[in-house]
Length: 151
Length: 320
Image 1 (cartoon, rainbow over the protein chains, first blue to last red):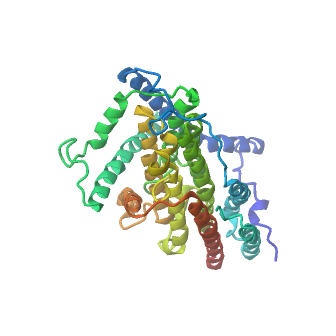
Image 2: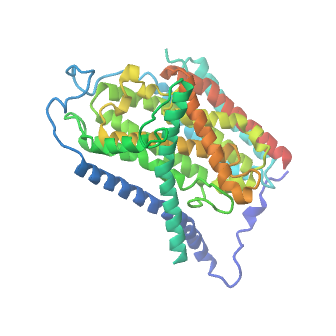
Image 3: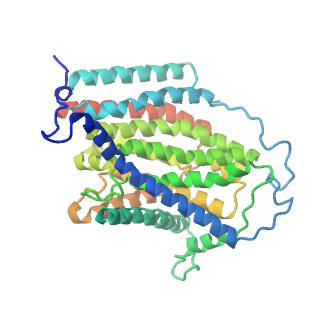
């Protein structure tokens, strides 16, 4: 059973007489990022909106600071110690797990778009189960080790 | 010239949705929760059943003094609400509301773009938590970070499941490929995605980062006036985005009877129904502790999400 996809052999989709093949990737990239320029434009609109809101807010609101008002809020009594307190981060092991799993799961997306195409099929699916198996074993190991218990 | 006009109109529409829908959802929350609890909710502002309550709130917030605590990291503190709010505006541009490219902009890597940009919003809460120089804010920020570790993975995995079913990562492309039986096929993934999204928005029952009875208002404790209002707007814009995305990914978006003419109406109805569920859950469930959420995520949501991916893969290859 050969799993070589047909599409790998057929990058020659350029119409004859069009731009030379060397230019084609550049054009694709330009067309591809065209959509994101609209997104960028929306980001500019959003930033402008916030800037206008902040400026208008400055014009509308009163500014009467007093030392008491600028004090850190701590239930109405004077704050104790520093604002940046020491605390135990109990979930740092989850953070390690998360980083490992999240990076792994990103690989699913490119695979997801092609795995059912003609030429892939069964073998690719088995590969995915091997991949999922690795993730599951990792999760079970962490579970068994008691990492998934906070308290 | 025509292209420029069209892009401008689309962006204007997205911006209008971003400004109006969160207010609508917020007002609905006031009224729905009130009636679920045997109250009337706001009745005076605007005359008819208090419809202008949130407009009045906005006017009030804009006039309030903007206090930055003396000990705070001033620049970061002031910037945090903008970082929390903007990502939801950007995500709206990629959510399709009808057939034939009725979408702000066809983003080729749609689902990828949406999940990546939504993740940025959490940075706003983390910035607020660390810059406030307040112990409650710091605890709230840490809880937000913990929550991030819990929900992000189920969200990614279930979104990948839909991408597998459709064979594309573009949101309009997913809807073009949609068939009605995808709803039962992907239902587990849909529930997981929605639950994980609730945790991202810090909505009840996953509102430990802003638990008022424990840490006042978490990362937003020190905020006043306009900046506080922007955090609130971010929360409700988040509800719109989450409901819209769940509707598009798992409920078929614009698909329904007369989808050709009424596609936008189906998207709207599905989104509003999901937003209603978000409000309903707030009035129904008690808060989960942070460790309970971690346990739920790692021992229930993630294994179920992996199972959903396996199911999607097998069915997809079987029908091809």
